[in-house]
Length: 342
Image 1 (cartoon, rainbow, N blue to C red):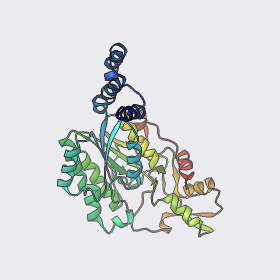
Image 2 (image 1 turned 120 degrees about the vertical axis):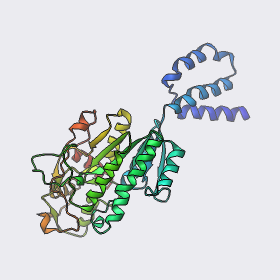
Image 3 (image 1 turned 90 degrees about the horizontal axis):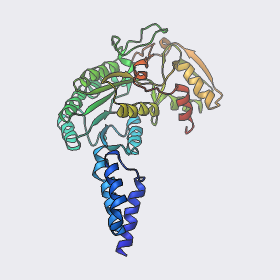
């Protein structure tokens, strides 16, 4: 009975791993089992096979990734995607586990886990609230990133910091797009805090700064706001003089995953869906895809005042990202996929 249970357990391990032989162990394990294994009892042979093929050699080749802010809109999806990828060993933290403003906590978690990558998905993202909570915004989005960068250096890890289009002033003519090397000049407190974060991320010897824009996913976002408004309104007003690239968290996760795989040159990359559109036209596209009959009126930013000023032009060039072999989906394709479950 013991041998039957043992055999069943070992076969499950073998089946779970897909019977894939890693490169480093291929020659030895293949030679061993073809030429020697038939002399051994079946159960001993199976045990050795599990140890040799699926043990130490495979985990050595796996990358350890620390996802900070795993319960946020981006972090939730990224953690799930990477956790389901056999190439990675994942550890995620929440605010309850880790306060990135606390240097000793950061050092303790990073030194214990010793990740190859630290991906920071934690941020204070309430743009309007940042105007009245600048110290909090600067601490979380800006100064805390120094803690992550120094911790990354201590274990020779690569830091991936998520940034924003709001580091630019948005005054570029609409027939032009922002490249990574253009001058930054935030027009609101959120943009200032994220720019401080970019500068501190550069303290890391190995870093990627990914500027994204108009992000939506599993949480409060523009797409869900439009859908909710359509349930109680026959007519809405949407700003028509701000342009950018609506970006799904799924697309940003795909970009991050490809960066982990390709390991391009360190630096700043723009990471959004392809294509540009105004908020007004984006709202109309949402309703068109969902077959919702609602009147959408275009208005100017001056007619919809908010505590934080928004950039008019948030068009980010992806040419540098393309040169690494990474090509994000068009925003409409990503939107249609997202709306399938909304």
